[in-house]
Length: 408
Image 1 (cartoon, rainbow, N blue to C red):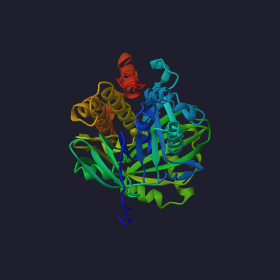
Image 2 (cartoon, rainbow, N blue to C red; image 1 turned 120 degrees about the vertical axis):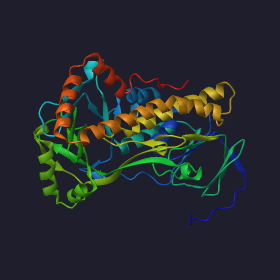
Image 3 (spheres, one colour; image 1 turned 60 degrees about the vertical axis):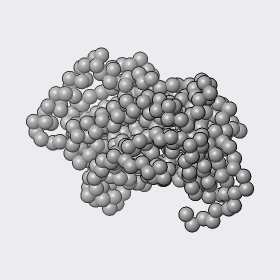
Image 4 (cartoon, rainbow, N blue to C red; image 1 turned 45 degrees about the vertical axis):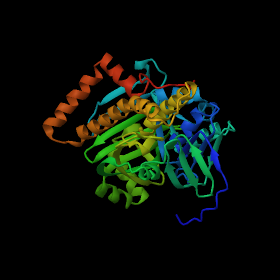
């Protein structure tokens, strides 16, 4: 780093250092804010939303199981008036009619999940952690050096503070600096695609319905936001995405409506577009002695419908519970016995979700006529599967997962 490091006078003992003050890092701090632990969250820079029709064009679909978590942890009070409910979902194979539908009432819930702007979730989590004097949120701040010792971790900040902690958690995203410092490699899958995100106004109400069209060039999602606005997530090949980004707003809207296929009466206005590359990755180790990776630092999936943050929120809850349990039984929560318990709880969910997203991507990527016909029969069968369909919905919404909703 170019920043001059000030001379440190004395090391400070803290109970947990979280590198990364985004949604997942803040969730870990929020879950632990009443535990009596001294927690320091380090974030390089404040979140800067990319506005599209005056909304953050980066959104997250929070499944119902994680909505219950946000409610129990106390974050929901800051969010409840800002979310768009998702009560149903329709999945179409290209421009074909019919498709498959999912309704929240099929699993006894009032909604499948909610859609919200990333900016709002971050602000709500910040408000939650600020309720406790035991949580320090340092922003802007960065880590100059991290040194793993047998009994603790030394964390030198760019400001000159030196922290000693039994555990450091990496929540600093897919290009995690902390993961690199621990010399942990990743398994990576580059889809050779980019995702275009923007806010859009449909001609008629979306009625809290999410729509996913699997096109030959990649999936297109229309996600129901508050106020009858949709967030679009349009994934396509790098070449096709570059073509779309080069279009004028009017021409892009025309291309979008050709692919939307009349859903919600078409789109009448679309805001500023942003783009990001699509890839999936998994860290070869999500724990090391005195290190735990959570969120995108540990794993990332294809953003078929903005679902990736759900894995990270569940990571945070499980790790928080393991830390609290270790303290209760006078264990060292930076020890591998404790961290292995976190890993073993999270890996089934992580691997299953990653495999499901990969299978879904490959299923709709292939356009052979015989395969397309078989795919249509499979969608029809799933739509009539009853109990099997309900089980799939409960698992995908996180309702059936053994994840703590409160930290005790």
